[in-house]
Image (cartoon, rainbow over all chains, first blue to last red; front, side, top):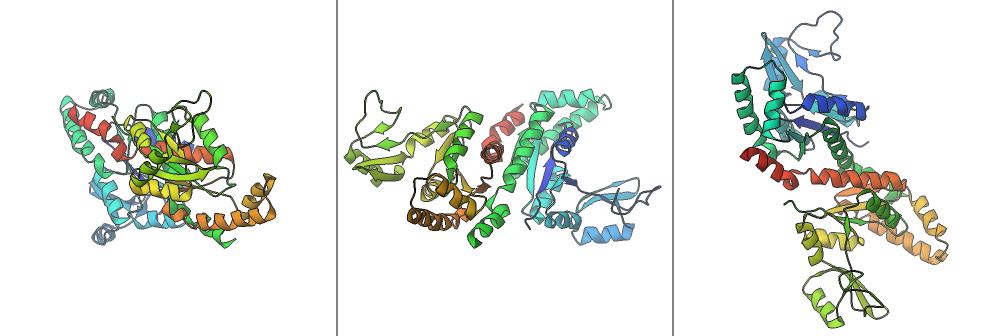
Length: 201
Length: 201
């Protein structure tokens, strides 16, 4: 069986990544998302491998040291991270996996797993990015300046990504990413089964 | 300005390349085709650079020796070929160029101009290819056997192409090729202008 695509999307804060990914999930129903791993305790009816993979702090640190965590963060004393193995597992079962990672996260994943398709989502202009950040209404002038500076640093790394997509409208950006996914499935390395089958007939 | 895509489609005789390309031209109106060069004399109102580029036999042979002809054939004592320079010219003007070349033609073009996107069109099965060849009703049993053997030789070269697309239906194949073209336009190397513009703001 052909491997499923692993697609990782990054972009600066405020670019609209969440909305575009939400639209993509509607367009491509079979698409899986990555389940995060956390060291916090399960709440209520949460089940391991459904909402999160639940691991102890020590287990999480062991996963980090083994290179099993693509990226992680700490929040209120608990770890939250993206595990590598379940992704590779889903992909080997032929499932498409769509990831929402930070810029270093996408680059680290590509580094570990070369077959990852990395996409950088760009704002149509820096002015538009600023107005989207202001539009949230939750962030101080200071924080907005900080995010704008960070955005430039991140955009400068777009050259390390396979593709760049400008988010003019949610629909156009989602259509372009869907086209990238369709095209990547036609790459010879992912469609060699079709060729082998014909040659065997 | 960004360069226009050069897309070259190849596939075995009977696979339905012509119909798929015709559908693609409807879907992507700005798409240019390559004008062939010939050593035959213009007929009626034919103009140089419209129906064909008209060159003398000597000029054609000089073009061949200079590596200016991607592929050529002889028919009733005249040369017919695909010239390289006009393609590169259209591409440098930002125009998308769609080519219908033989398998060696696509590979030679890729070799000369690495940025070419090469697509191999596959039949859904060898049986279906045979039935499409028989359906033409113009070819002898012998010729069909010859074409089937040639098809296998050609399909074995699909691995040298960037993409493979199976022609199950004209619409599906054209949609997949259109997605490949959309995706290739999002490659960082073809969209770096967008990134530079943002970084300069």
